[in-house]
Length: 162
Ligand code: GDP
Ligand code: MG
Image (cartoon, rainbow, N blue to C red):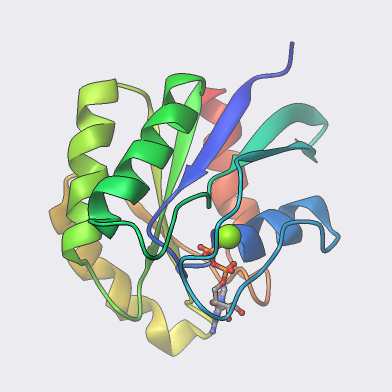
């Protein structure tokens, strides 16, 4: 079976946008508002001739108590079945308490992690990613899911550990 790559991160950081960019088609549902209920969905993806399964995570109840717990629990299920995890953060917002909750869960999972710093649409925004080293998740890869910028480099790094 193809290796499984789970994409996790708090609502609205751009997980589904990144998936669509990797797939080359608009299949994952992109939402302008966070917290829309959605099940985990798997997609067959490919980069540089290597096939892998991408698992989008976005299923949580916006009105349920404790959104941090909801997001972390949802991500945890996807992570359990993954070989590698793409942790997406919004580099223009910076690190939030929810990001930190997800990081704590990821540490417990002991899965390999690639830290994806999304919404770096322009070169001049790249200095924003430096603060993300403080998550302790290694090198942040600056990308723009919207424009595709940086995704090839990030995927090259992913393939090295698949
Ligand atoms: P998800 O909840 O993590 O799946 O996030 P979505 O993919 O649904 O995106 C949430 C919002 O962020 C949408 O309005 C996207 O258009 C926007 N977005 C996603 N990626 C980028 C990016 O690289 N740059 C910018 N400027 N906006 C983005
Ligand atoms: Mg989504």
